[in-house]
Image (tube, rainbow, N blue to C red; front, top):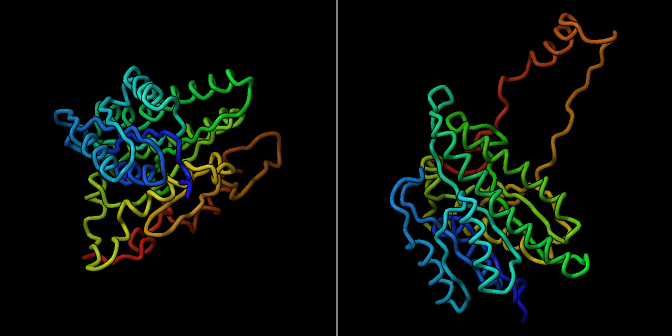
Length: 313
């Protein structure tokens, strides 16, 4: 039986642990040759000495299962190293077909206490890291299309956003902003690359990883069966979005966790008000907007425990 990704090559960033590891294993299981990228720093805040260990370990795991993989330990937030990452896939496998952007760090702090470095470092790894790899993968696909006389080529991008940007996250203004930026990057990329045959989509995963150990610390794991917050619940969607079957899905945002996939609509107009004169006055806006928001809570967000359907342990 032919596997969905047989003969294709993929890059997964941040693939040494957690979500990235599960995604790399899934792509390999579906037949793709994988470049496992991970900078290897032990701290989830990006601290500590970089190491080849995590990427090498996952690559070995893929090869032990009969797949094809190589490790890459470059920093995707570095423009040159991101270019080298894309080139490594092309050099090793002849082409690049799939890019999964997952690398990230956390440096949480309330907005009134956050330092410039805490802001810059998170934006750099998440948002710039997504851009860097996307930029070089996109150039590769565009060049391939031009070489083929303008014919469409095969290309898939799966980016990693977060519900932190959808619902807010009080202690993560840098992270929420970066994840919102990734959605904007995804939709822009989807429009730009569609004519070349390339799709770009984003996911908002919920999973118990090193990055979310504090968020989900109160949600106990079941004694039997797969943890609803296991990264293995997220990986199949990434594999599907990377496959030919998902050719008609482009520029979309999907929430995924625990056997659930939800498609997020683009923002819609909730209400519309027109001035009865040439332009609005303060009094007119006060008369229209103040009553509209009078009975609404100041921040309409979901309760994580209710949505997840989990009990705290």
